[in-house]
Length: 86
Image 1 (tube, rainbow, N blue to C red):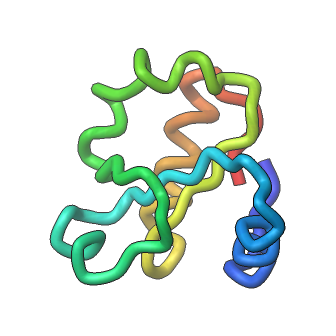
Image 2 (image 1 turned 90 degrees about the horizontal axis):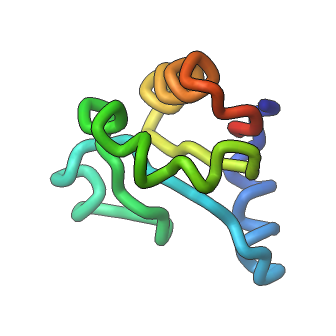
């Protein structure tokens, strides 16, 4: 449930770690620039819980532009029983 910096994320990605990275921005933002994360816009997150259930106890890294949406997504996932969001 700790936050990580983009530098830490890049380092882990460059090292080839298998990561669960989700981008909670909108499609047009994702199309403009993405880091290779799976797109799940914040507004659609509640409808994706069943798809994410197998990750409930795994590390999930949430990405957005400023940290606000990823922070909201983190709180939503924690409230939904997910235990390891960054």
